[in-house]
Length: 496
Ligand SMILES: NC(=O)c1ccc[n+]([C@@H]2O[C@H](COP(=O)([O-])OP(=O)(O)OC[C@H]3O[C@@H](n4cnc5c(N)ncnc54)[C@H](O)[C@@H]3O)[C@@H](O)[C@H]2O)c1
Image (cartoon, rainbow, N blue to C red; front, side, top):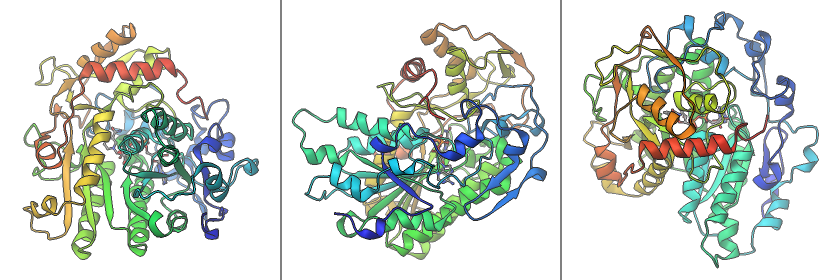
């Protein structure tokens, strides 16, 4: 039985995914006309609210340019110039006051009710991992891979700013389906994902998640995947980026500390390197991010390192992702951003199913010093990337990982690249998606975009050596799995 203090609060909504699925918040209903992916009006996109306050950020947003230009590189690239950047429309600053009960909230079961429905009487001894952002693209795959180890239980905290409830329901089902024949009821129960709808910017929301678990079921560790992530948008609405990415992290660290939770795996990014002096890029490269987004990741790493220095019991690993791509091989979960995709691969996938074709694809520059002249990035299959989080969670328990740190700091913090170590050009990716989808992707070459660097390829050898991480899936795997997801789900999760 669960303790009474997890009574559903007014600001945080907790539901077992099987109950929550298919719902959408009243906020999104208000914001959208038709599907939520339709662009907000200028007025809507300028309104930024929290549970306790609401204010206009109109002065922070520049006029939106309606001519679409394809971002050449994924999120890891340097920022686009404001004049041609559309990412502010792709990820509008939706209101975050979305965690009130929708009008029909009585359909959403309280966890204590769910517990009696879905949990066996025997308590599980598996450590519980909280994944803020676990409904998003990377977080949902991390949650799935974590469950598939059958060593951990998973709780998700997400405000659905850029995600849909169905992701957690589907990943839970995949985990159950992949159990071996004869799996026990306990095994099935342990695949259930507890989902809290709440916001990292609210310490109360985070506290309510921690308060919901007691004794052996206390939250054991955190894999932080929640963030705002569009490089271009970050220079348009920097306050929001610092608020969510840095403020949200500090809130989380405070609540973790208050609850004696001392294990963190953090989603960092190759953007912390800026324009690297050397490629492939080792972790020892100086950090020189060139965008607001990149600086939020860099500052977050510094903050986590300081916390590790101050509290010897605190252990953390930062994972610097290169360019995650593809989808789980089941084709049941994948990337479904709200609005037009800001990254190359989801955009290609959506073009292939008939969306965003107008004007074709624009490629920024074909005169870079790369094999075909277009920018090169290190694409890594999302399942490989997700697997790296399990490596990292396990490494948190190993003293040798932290003892091996040769930097001047003394705390237990390490950062590792998660990449494949193989560079692929924009045209390589277009070709791979053409082969799997049959769509020709008519494209034009336009001028280079300010800030794009020719090559961002990881040196993944440190993560391989120390974490036992290895990205084995190929470019064809990424393209096939992405296409399976997109063609099976042309409307994504089909939710608003
Ligand atoms: N996708 C990439 O190319 C890439 C590369 C490097 C690093 N990263 C980092 O990986 C992490 C996950 O990225 P992703 O691609 O899955 O993005 P995503 O947008 O799909 O996932 C982020 C999740 O966080 C949630 N979220 C956002 N703000 C929140 C808040 N205030 N409170 C609670 N939940 C909130 C969103 O709803 C979403 O589910 C991010 O930290 C991102 O910066 C991504």
